[in-house]
Length: 281
Image (tube, rainbow, N blue to C red; front, top):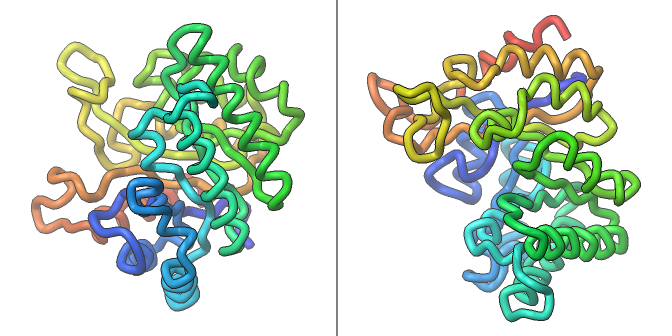
C-alpha cells in the first residue's frame, strides 16, 4: 500500500450515492469521504440497511475505500454549537451517534465532525462538550473521531491534547488561509503526524484585494490557487505523514464544467496533480 492515498468528498460531485463512487473511480481516486445523505433531515439514511448495502456494493464494484463519514448536514444545521440540553443540541448528539453506528456497521473507520466558528466562551464550551460526547460514543463502537476546525494553531493544542489522542484532525490546508488563522505549512509541521487523521485539500484564487473568502474567492483546481498547495505538500512530506489526502474541490461548480471539462475530467486533473506532487514520496 502506498504511503499516501487519494480520496474525494462525496459532495464534490453533483449526485451522491453509487454514482459519486463511480465518478470517483473514473477520475482515479481510490477512496471517498461519504456525506450523510441528509442526516436527520432524511431520517438518517446511512443507518438504513438498504442504503448501506448500496454503498458497500458500489465500493466493492469500483474499488473505492469508504474512508470516513462527514456530517455534512450537521455542519449546515450549526447544531454543534448549541447546548446539549437544547433541542438543537439533542439532535446534534443523535446525529453524531447515528453516524458512528453507521460507520461501525459499514466498516468505516472514521467519522469527521466540523467544529468551526466557535464565537465566544459559550460556543467553545458547547463544541468541546459535543466532542467529548462523540469520542465517548466512538470508543464504544471502535470508531475514530476527526475534527475539522478554523481555530489558531495554539488553540489546536489546547483543544486536541485534552483528548489524549482520541480526537484527531482533519486538517484542511485551505482553511487557515481563508479564516486568517495561520500559514498552513507551518501549522502542519507544528502539529505533526500523530495529531492528524487525514487531510482535506482544495484551492482558491485570491480576490482583487488579495483576500481568500467564501464569498469572493472561486475554488480552482489543485495547484492553481493562492492557498500554498505546493508548500503544504512539502510540509506533509516533512512530517512523514502516511494516510489519506481527501480532495474537497467542488467539481459540481460551473467553472469546473466549461471548455470541454466535466465532473470526472475535472476531478481527474486533481488526481494527476496530487500524484505528481507526491511522486517522490
